Amino acid sequence: MLDDSKIRLILDSCTNNYMPNNQFKKGELYSFITGKASTAIARRLQKKFNTAGLNLTIEQWSVLYHLWKQDGISQQELCNATFRDKPSITRLVDNLEKLNLVKRVASENDRRINLIYLTKQAQKLQEETMVLAEETLNEALETVPVGKVDVCKEVLQVVYDNLK
Image (tube, rainbow, N blue to C red; front, side, top):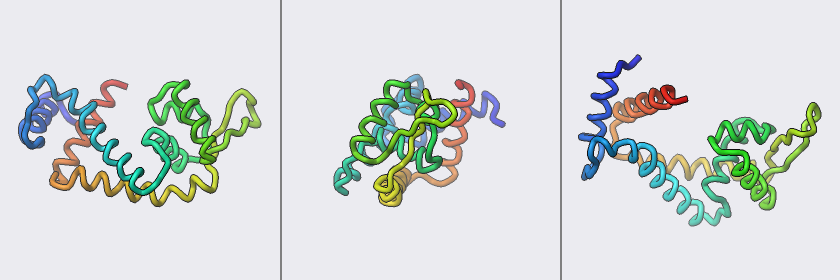
C-alpha cells in the first residue's frame, strides 16, 4: 500500500522525470493525467482506425470492447463500465445498431431492460481493432521503462480508488 509521502514522491518524479520537454508546473499534473495522455492515445488510435478503413469511433470501440469482454449486458452495465451517462450510451448503441454491430434484445426477466449483443460483424472487428489498440499503446509507451509504467499504473489506481 502506498502512503501519502510515497504517492507525492512518485507524482513529483512523474512530473520531473517521466515527461520529456516538461512544460508542466506541479499543480498542472492533474490536467496531464486526466487529459493530454488519454487524448493523444485516442487520437492516434482513431487515426489508425481511419487508415485501416474502419468506420468506427473510439467511443464506439470502447462500447464494443466491453461487449467483447462480456456480451449481452444491459445498457446500464455499459454506462458503468465505460463511465458514460445513459444518454451517451443510448446514442452510442443507436449508432452501433445502425452500423449493424450490435442488437438490442429486451430482457426476459424485465422488458424495461435492453441487453446489448454483438453481431457477427462486430465479432469480426475484435482482432483487428485490438491489434491496432495494442500497437498504439506500444507506441505511447515505447521509451518508458517497464518499472515506470508499473509505478504509474499503481499511482493512477490509487487515485481512482481514492475518488470512487
